[in-house]
Every structure is written in structure tokens, then in C-alpha cells.
Amino acid sequence: MEAELIEAHQEAVAARAAGDDSAHGELVAEWQLKLRRLLAADPTVATELRRLLDEFTPRLPEGGQTWSGSVTMTGTASGRGRVFQIAQGHMTITES
Image 1 (cartoon, rainbow, N blue to C red):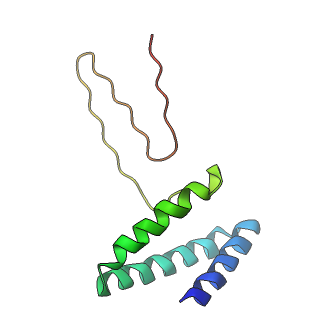
Image 2 (image 1 turned 45 degrees about the vertical axis):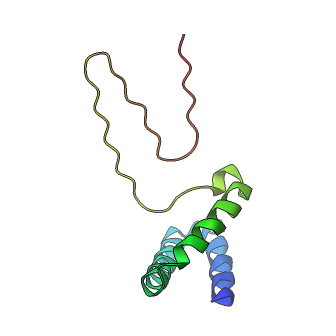
Image 3 (image 1 turned 135 degrees about the vertical axis):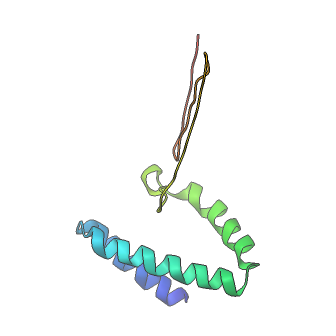
């Protein structure tokens, strides 16, 4: 699996560099399916995968720390209430 992952990474980098969103999306979908199958076969793998993500994600450049997939967020405020939401990245709120 390691060799496959290295090859897929090289293909993904090349697809991004060429602006080929379709090829990049296909690679992402393929690896999402592989990871789902791996986790279904052995749920304890999730702990190790989370550890690896926690270790390596901070090492990525800011633009490389993006998510793939969809995020649905709903915020409701009433009266004088306010809602602040962020799906990824950083949020700084300064009030005076």
C-alpha cells in the first residue's frame, strides 16, 4: 500500500500542477474508498490514522492544510446574538 500511496501522491501533484481537477478528484475518491474499506475491516486503524494526521498536518504549508469533502454548517442567532463559523483555517474575533 505504501508504494501505491507514493505513486498516487506523485500523480496528484502532477494533476494539480497541470490544473487537471478531474484527475485529482478521481485520485481523492479512489483513496477515500480505500481508507473506508481499511477502516471497515479494522476500526482500530482509525486511532493510528488520527495520530499520523495530527503529527503531519501541522507540517504542511498553510495552503496544504485543506480538507476534501463537504461541510454543512447551520447557525441561528436571535435577539442580539451573533454566530461565528469557520469550516477550516483560522478565525480571529476582536471586539471593543
